[in-house]
Each structure stands twice: as C-alpha cells, then as structure tokens.
Length: 560
Image (cartoon, rainbow, N blue to C red; front, side, top):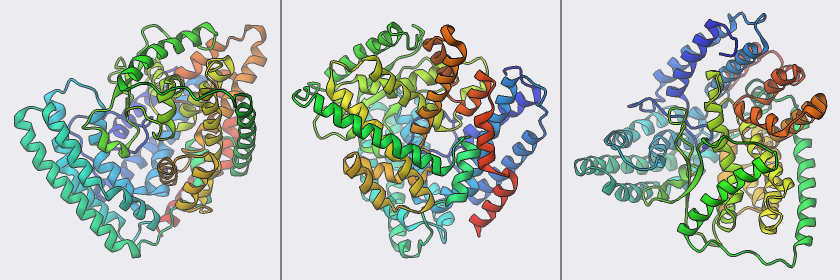
C-alpha cells in the first residue's frame, strides 16, 4: 500500500478477491479478469442476495476506515476502493442488467468460455476441462436468466438478444468443432456432449424470449438520477450532464472541421494498398509496434521499458472466429501473467472489414496507438508497487489514456506520410465525441437503440454492424461511451496544470510514465495526488449529492 493503513490493505485484498470471482462478464476487453480455477458463473437469486450481503459488509468496513490523517496516497487508495464499491452497487441495484437485459445472460453464459479461447496455445489439459465445464453450465445460466428476467426485462434488449441468438447455437457448434483437434481425444467426446447441451439451451432461450417478448415492457434507460450516480460516485467525473453534452458537441464540431480540412489537403492522394494477407499484416505489425515504441521514446513522449511486454497481431483461429460477436478479439492477459504479450486476432485483410479492423489492414500502427497503449498501460499498472492500483475502476482513465495517445501520435507526426491513417484518427476522434451524446441520450431515455445505431451510422459514418454493436453495448453499459472523451479532456487539463506548475522542469515522458502507471486510477484522484488539488473530486461529490440517501432511494425506486 502507498502509506495506507493495515486495515485498508486487508479490506482491499479481500474485496478484490471477492470481486474477481463475482464481477459480471462483458464484451469489453479492458474489464476482463482472470477467474479462480473452476469458477462457474452464478446469477441465481441466492447468489445475488449473497452479493448484496457481501457488498454491505465491505461498504460498512470502508465507512469505518480512519484515513483522514494518512498521506494523500493512502486517502486516494481509500477513495479508489470507494469507487469500486460504488460500481458494484451500481451494477446490482441501479443498472440491474441482471434483471432487465437478456444480452447480459449471453455474456455470463458464453464470455467466460470466449475468454479461455482468447488465450493462445499451448493448450494445457486444465483449459480443456474448464471449457467443457463452462459449456455444461450454459443451461443453468440461461435458466437463471428466465427466472430473473420474467416481469422485468426491457423489450429493446430482448429484441437485440434475439438478433444475436439467431445464429448463436450454430456459431457455437462451428467453433467447438474447430476446437476439437486441439484437445486430447478423450476430451473431445465430453466437448461434443457439452456443446450439444449448450446449443439446445441457446435455442430454447431464443424460443422463450420470442414467446415472452410482448410482455417485456421495461425501458432500456436507467434514468437521469441513476446515471448521475454512476458519473459522480463510480467514475468520479467533475462534470454535470449538461457540461458533458456541451463537451461532446464542441469536440464533434472541432474534429468534423479538422477532417474537412485534412480531406481537402489530401484529396489527390490515393488510398494505400491493403496488406497482402494475414501473414503479411502480422509481420508488418510486429515491426510497426517496435517502430511506434521507438518513435514515442525518440520524440520524448514516453519511454517504455525494454522488458515491457509487446502488443502483437495473430491470425484468427477457426475456433474463435464464429464467436467474435461475444467480445473484442483481444487477449490482454492479466496481472497473474503480466509477461504474456497481448494479442489482437485478425481476419484476412479486405476492403469491407468493419470500421476499426479495416484501417488496421491498411496501417497496423493505428491499432498500436490505441489497443497497444491499452496493453502497455495495463502491464505498467501491474508493476505498480501499490497492489490496489493493479485493478480496473472505471473506463475514463484507461480509455482516456489510449485516446490521448492517438492524438499525441498524430500531433507528433507519426502519420505525416500516411494521410489515410491521419484521416482515420481524426474521424475516430469524431466518433468518440459523438459517443458522448449517444451514451447520455440512451441512459436518460432520449434515444432508442434503433435511433442510436442510425445516428452512429450516419454521422461518423460507421458500418451498420459496428453501429448496432456500439448502440447496444452503450445502452447496456451507460457511461462507457463517454469515457474516451471525458478521460482525454481530464488528461489535457492535468497535463497543462502540471506543465504550468513545473515550468522548465516539466518533462512529458515523466508525466506520461506516471499517468500510464496509475492508469487505472480515476483522473480526479490522480489530480489530487499529483498536484495536491482536490477540486475535481470535490466537484464530483457536489454533483453527486448525498451518496447514502440517494443510493438507497434509487435502489428502492428501481425495484419498485
């Protein structure tokens, strides 16, 4: 611990062991955790009751901590733990995806399996055994879904789940057939039996959703009050919802104007050729990743340690490709295996790939300065001497760092000779700005899923598949879409104030080295620790109001 009390250290250790075993699975790669061996997802009523009981105990112990006289680093650690506790309350009692969203149960049933498939070979016997166990547990999870969703589900989420379920059983069968040769012969028979049971459960769940769809009347929005709780108690953002909307709209206009200028400037430059094939893209990305690291060091942006793990591309395995609708095909490893290289699995390069994959087939460096930054930042955080800072709290710091890195690379000249890449980075800035308005509008009930997908498809533009994925994900995970821009804006302010205070002694590489190492820490807390400035944390608390009363009232209203 960073000077913190023994009791805080014990509480944090116990909480994170519990959280690792009980955290919901999702599409997002940044939030993934490595589960205890043999753990099976459990969202039964008894398990949810036990989660609430455990959360109440942790919250009581957190409230009893005496840290006012401790150094700032320890008080930041206590606030970090408060953010994590607030997130669990948000998930269980305010967002209530387990109660409202059928897609949530596709995640809980299948994403643990998908996460095991993301790990690269070799395939030890234990992994095959866990895959068979998870497949065999799919019927239990979907039975829990029926019990929890009845009378509470939101129709738009159910309709999106039906879109995914249309081919889910077939996709699972195709993937597991391709997996069979990688497992011992004795295990393949168990795999086939467990796959068949899981396929039948998916088909039965599809039929159940279709039958009960007319009765699913709950809205997809969490509502303004609950969303404010997330913004100010979980994400610790110092902005009101109105300020966030203004921020997003201003950034959208700025980046749209920049894109017009760039397109005019490069109007006569031809589009570069795609990588010839997957093998060539993998080879080129390996070289490009090292070139980007060298560029960042040479330009004085950040000096990554030579022994820090790498971010690599790899061909998409046949057992993974049918299931990529379950999550970003990115193996980010974990604090338990910090030396593993991160992997991004690739489809063969072609012009009709989705939005992000297409540009990487032209220039792998574009992926390096976002997904690669995630991989490097995570690995740096796992080296932090304070174990409490190894964990994810909210996306604004993680996504803000990656988004900021993209813009830094563009400004420093990484893409000067490749206008198509520069144009994409600016267009992606426009996407991240638009996400703010879409995220908030979905959360407060001002946009439907269809309207949100249409807006993303038209105003970026995104391909329809990516637009629908984004709209459904943001509706089910309010606050994630706006995290990119809010994080970057906070970083800009922190950097400017640090540079002003330090004057000629300020070094960008030192600033970013610390920022990335503490990249799991909400930026209001980083500001407090780095600059002894609590103003952003105080603003978050003012906007959030009385946590205790508002949280209880919101939970009761949600259940009612």
